[in-house]
Amino acid sequence: MDEIDKKILNILKEEGRAPYVDIAGRVDLTEGAVRRRISNLIKDGTIKKFTIDTSAAVESVVLIKTDPTMTRKTAESLKEHSYRVFELSGEYDIMSLVQAYDIKDLNEKVDSIRETQGVTDTITLVKLNEYF
Image (tube, rainbow, N blue to C red):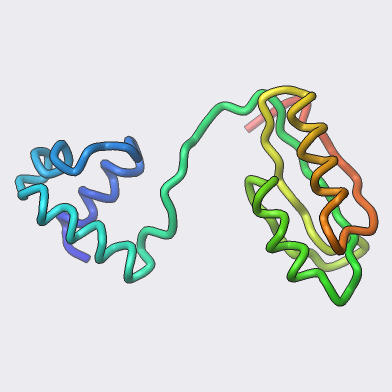
């Protein structure tokens, strides 16, 4: 990775939907060269995914117990409803971070998590305040 790749990454971090032609103008390359560089950054794993950062009105942690033989499969299934998913040690097997636009949306997502094959129990913790 060279300095131009780093500039491209910084542009994409700030503006994930920046058109290739705009990025090209900012790094003094052709649109095709930028397209190839981004493609290479994806292939080598430097760029893992493109995402949208929104301001969710409601955020929660859902702690999940699973059938022990299905923890990994269950975690994979939870990607659809979760912002992030972690396997845990301890009483609960999975932690799912959920973002929602309102309480109704959160409730629907938690209901979907509870209906996921392998889930045996959940506890939902809703974020009230953020201090730092």
